[in-house]
Image 1: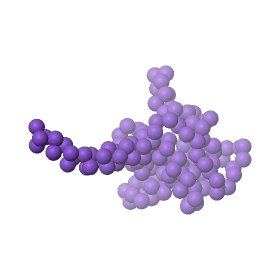
Image 2: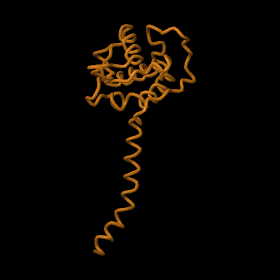
Image 3: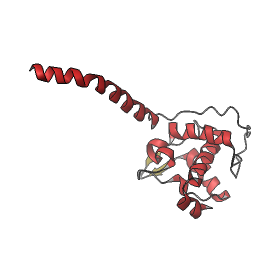
Image 4: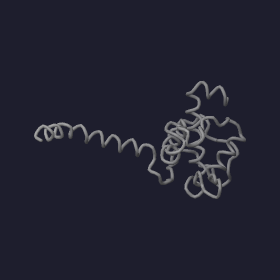
Length: 153
């Protein structure tokens, strides 16, 4: 009995940091509730939707997009935009105007199958600036993987 208590007392200092680290990882993968994104620092785009991503190559958009992606997309589409199989790998979207329009439309309207949302609509949550920043971040992650970059460029 005393040996068991002594072992438990020695393990406790290790258990607390492990529990905190696990909690941090869970929160880093999104908290489950869609949230808006602060796009301060990006050029405002106005009311009319753009047909093409206006932030391509914009470092500030990548930074803002990374935060927005991790808050809203990572739980299904994977950390660092690398799909874990639950949802499509967004890094594989072509870098074309048609793909840009598809991305904007899909994020705004969500995705339904059999009358159920597989992806929630973000039209009332994310601004056009936020959506394009997320797209810019995803493209920057695609560029880091030579196999994916070769397919989409």
